[in-house]
Length: 261
Image 1 (cartoon, rainbow, N blue to C red):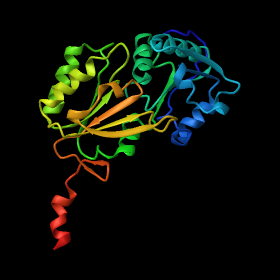
Image 2 (cartoon, one colour; image 1 turned 180 degrees about the vertical axis):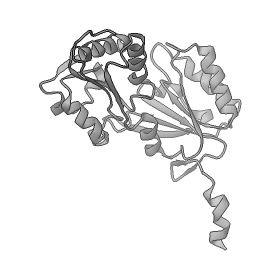
Image 3 (cartoon, rainbow, N blue to C red; image 1 turned 30 degrees about the vertical axis):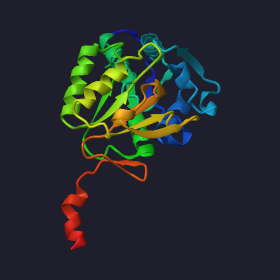
């Protein structure tokens, strides 16, 4: 194994939650406080409370530096350091936990390093809370980023999930360079959903500049959406009540008559 007789350190993949320090879990806060080195995407390091960064060695890269960050973190842990690799939301949802474990497995380090994945509040849960209760029945998550997944695969998954009447959570919906994928995705969903289907748009959930809105599927303006946004597309049962999205689980259908009787 790599590392020889060196005393390996501890490596924790830490979930930061949506951004508000109040939503950083105590477990993740403790891990950040104990770490000697914190590794992350530059923008995500800005979400870490400053007092948890003070006196720490910091490693940051830009948007496409995931491999570099994961490798640097593994090297530091092999050298005996206690390392925290940070991700926004939950580190296991479209984030760094998978890459860290994959790279560690490739290098034969899973049996040598103490690697822990610490859960957090995922972006979809933050967005759903702001919208009301759109995810209280079955739902599917699809990332519209075709950087690592072929677009043909994304289209196939979208069509299958929409056809199965899942509520849809769309991650990475639109960027400056990827401006056609969202309109195409909405076309695919519209094969199975009516134009009045509620679509929730949440931008910067629990961060400065937070914005929450709901539109019908047929009236959503893709130009309002960016990489800081999450879209939640309702299913055939999702409705609006006083501006809140609600996807019924079926309690009132099953028990409502008994209660009213």
